Length: 213
Image 1 (cartoon, helix red, strand yellow):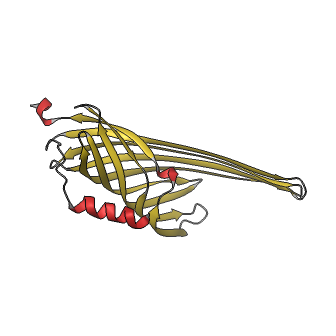
Image 2 (tube, rainbow, N blue to C red):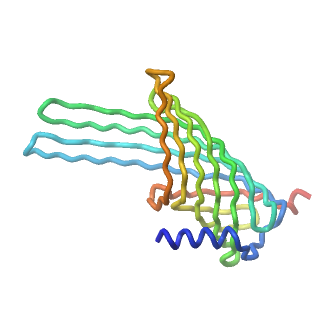
Image 3 (cartoon, rainbow, N blue to C red):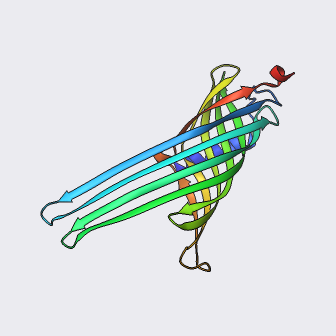
């Protein structure tokens, strides 16, 4: 599956399938993603158990400009919120761990449109995201680069529906710990993510060049 995804990325980045989109048109839109997880275990034989719950929310408005009939260049803003609570109980009592994070990112991007059939397009979006935020009381800086496959369907001349799932990514994260201003934790990750929690559903409003003349 990973090899197929890589092949699709390469093909759509370097070949134009004559997407019938007007050069000079503008697209505005964004995506919304929400995930909730609840998990609990109870082992009465050993008098212990574990409860875990988490919520994540991503809101990302964007605006782009078609530099050609198949290439969209744009910029967006991203807000991410995550919180979780883990409760463990056993012979020695109950312990609760909580986590909360808020992150704001700026997102320049390039999207390649490849026409499948009338009004229906395969897309490959390359994102650069950089921003700051907080994890509990610690300051965070993040840099992300990823390539994401997706689909776009133009309902009419003004509106399009979009969806995407999976990505190839590189992430850099730096956490400045509150207890020591000189103490930083750095983390780098890269790979392919095909998890369902990467699924996004969005919309786009199209301002055609013709309508602005």
